[in-house]
Length: 114
Length: 110
Image (cartoon, rainbow over all chains, first blue to last red; front, side, top):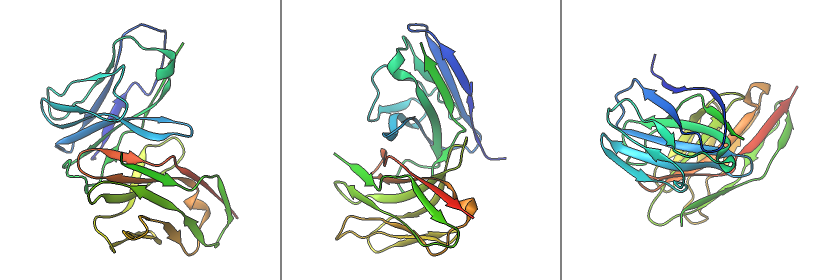
């Protein structure tokens, strides 16, 4: 089954404790992206990757890091989480980043930083 | 910068009512436009898209037409069902970045 998986689905952590949210897709997609969803703000793009070793900032990259060492994986790293990073995070992938292709979304990771 | 503005919710309709959710956009260049739907507890799914002016996207009875002159991409459905209850997001892309609206929550009551 074609899918995007994220782990963990739920995470509660404390300020400053480094964490990683994993994202993996099995569709051989070139493009992958991370979003955060907040009430009243919709989805905002954090980082995206056009292919292995090619990443770029989205609209709200501050406080986040990403890496793309393999085509299928695109982890999101919070080196020193803060309460304002409490949010619902989605990973997505598409066959190309040319902008007209469908994105496939993971189920989401709900992060709470206390 | 590029952005999407969509109709505030929540919207509550009776089954078989007509649905319109307004969406307007600001973009440099020639964006592709999308409607995504999010059911409770799930990720977003593509509902329909249009990649150039005057294109009409359609799926599952939903339609939206890319109007360059009014920079709009309004979502419509002639007769909603209870199963259409979800949050709807308008989005655009002008290349490698995507911009989403704030979402419109729709509840359809029997």
